Image (cartoon, rainbow, N blue to C red; front, side, top):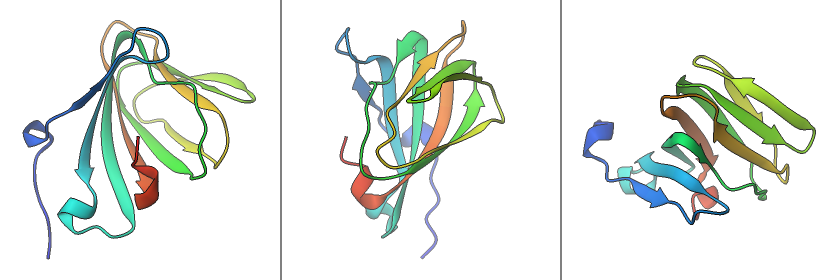
Length: 118
């Protein structure tokens, strides 16, 4: 069955410990609760001055930048990102997304189902 909803109706999970992650929120848009057995689509918002944790894990993920300006830090360095950019993060590659602008950084991140446990 087709599942349709709106981001505004999905309650965000907030992440901010003031040290390893700051000003990050995650909304699970599509996943097992919507009947998707293989992948999870998440919407992240990183506030001005915020960042995701610097981490790695056993699964890949794909990211599409929607709004804002940011920096993706990874094991080989870092690169700026802007709306329309997309990022592939391979398994076990250390990475972090940081807001580098004055507006929120928003992006879609798709992972396999087992990857949405954080």
